Length: 234
Image 1: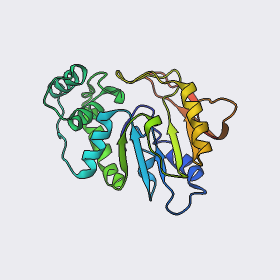
Image 2 (image 1 turned 60 degrees about the vertical axis):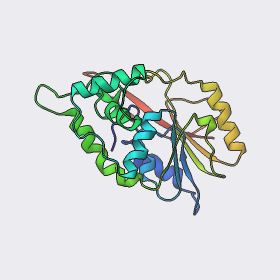
Image 3 (image 1 turned 120 degrees about the vertical axis):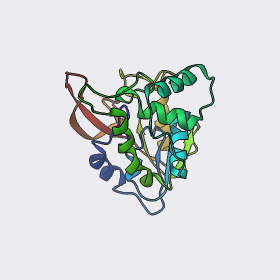
């Protein structure tokens, strides 16, 4: 599965049974913050994935269509793509920029710095490419949209899973500041429209109900702090 900052690949098997327990035939599963698609990839039936990052969505759309990305991403190619991402001038497609930025960035921090290889010869870029390949077939049938979560047109009575940017965590370089109060208001609006909401976060306001939690070790260099991943509903 795709390596992605904040990925839920380690807890997917724990939270999906909770979210899908009462799902009915034909009901949509929607992710307005799809990220690496490590959750929605394991859901069958009608699915809608959205994200505000145009390079991420362009990458997934192209991969699902069968387009072939660069198989080798050296540092020169990486720097070329990063310069175009930052300056907006170049000939690479959004698909290629997304692919290079997500596959070849250290710890999956989009164009943070080149991942490269370790001193013992471990090729982090090739590992990222190898990890995402089996995922591509699982994404077929998903409808992808690039937009702010508030502009996403969600099918009636959907199950909506929101893996929002956690408070106090790293943002991508060009990602807009996330308004948590606006998000909370949107959640109540979605509930009133008949959707079933689930949210991943470390903590949520008292109006939200905790339905699952699990301590997870976060690997950060030589430090390995433990925090509780939590799933809330409304």
